Image (cartoon, rainbow, N blue to C red; front, side, top):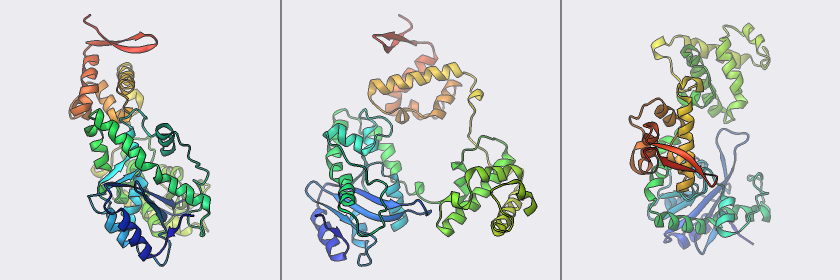
Length: 384
């Protein structure tokens, strides 16, 4: 039976065993359904020959020695789809681990698509099926069952082998630079810092009216701060659709909230008062400081047919080069290309230009076309 580490002595002992490894795998288990911040419940670590689980909820444990270890550059820390893990470490320690390698990002240039799961990778690379039935467990409840422990450990025990295979594949095809930018972005602290004033950008807003956007911005900022202070999910304070409706109605007093069925004038007296105060603050902002949105309706892209041809080209390159589409080019860049704007686009720099940018320009200049042979798309030189 696997022992879960819950004392400083045991933690230091196990870290000592792996501290000279070239790379180790890390994963976490947490719960977040009822809180704004994730509650860290387990930390799993595995090297080639040793694996263990840390219980951060233990009152006998201080995670200082763990942080000292993962903050060192010499040991590569392997994660899979680890943005949430990184966010938890940032919340817990105020910093990020160094030398992090995400196997989901690595898989994007090895023919596994945009967001391949850990279990899919393990199955395809190692021919092992992982039992994911414990995924939605209450990881804060103690004691943990043997099944939960086995599940948690399986998230790291195969990760080392997956890393070795992907790293070798990338080296053989000389694609290290293809994922360099994504890996570096994963370790940027600014991506995990909470900026409440920018929270409105996470909402699905279809309007471009700046006065409306200004109200949305102020309401979203207020909601984010309220969620943080209470440590509850945003929708527990107020739902997205309700927030957007309030911004549209712009209620001036509590009576105006009768138009919104989710509010009770007596029960929600305090929150109604806060919302009205927030909207009044928004009204003091000069028009020239109103925010703008990058939302673009499809009918605003004039050359829709050209845009669709560029999408076909992206799919062709993705399949031909075995690299994820979203790593090659983003939707907004395709829209700019379709309108003839090529300035400062990543698609025309470095490896992206070599496999896609040059072809995109040739397509837009009429130098190449598409053909079909054996039920597969092919690039045809239009001069031939």
